[in-house]
Image 1: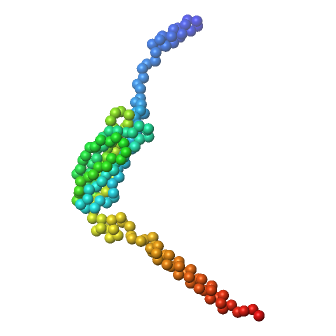
Image 2 (image 1 turned 90 degrees about the vertical axis):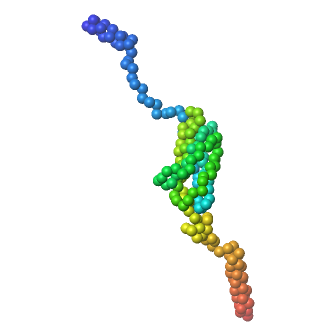
Image 3 (image 1 turned 90 degrees about the horizontal axis):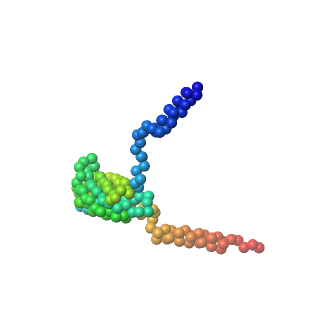
Length: 182
C-alpha cells in the first residue's frame, strides 16, 4: 500500500512539473476599439436642377473626437454609383455638395474610415429623390398647406371683439327694461 501511495505521489508530481497541456485560446470578442456611429442628413426630396446637400456626422462614446476619412457616394436606388467623393473628417458636421441629378430615387451613403486604431469605422445611408417639388405638391415647397392652423389672428381678434360687444349690448339693454319696483 505504501508503494502505491508513493507511486501515485510521484505520478502527480511529474504531471505538475510537466504542466497541463497547452490549450487553444478563443479570440477576444472585445477589440478594445471604440465604436462609432455615422449619420447622414439629406432632404427627402431635392428639386430638379438643384444640388443635394449632404450633412454627415460621426459620433462616438468617447471624450476624443473621431478623425479620419469619409467616403460619400450617391447611387441610384438599386443601381450603381453616380457620385463619389472622399473628404477628411475631424469632428462636427461635414457638408458635401452632390451633383445636379435627373428625376429618380437615390441613396446617399457615407463610410467612416478612422485614422489610427482607437476607433472602429461605421456606415450610414439615407434614401431621397430628385423631383419637381411643385409638380407633386401644389401646396408649395415646404409641403404644408397655408394657414391650416385656423384663420389669421386679425380675424380672430375681430370676432372676439364682436362677441364681447354683443354680450355687453344685451346686458345693458336688459338692465334698462327691468320694471321699477313700487
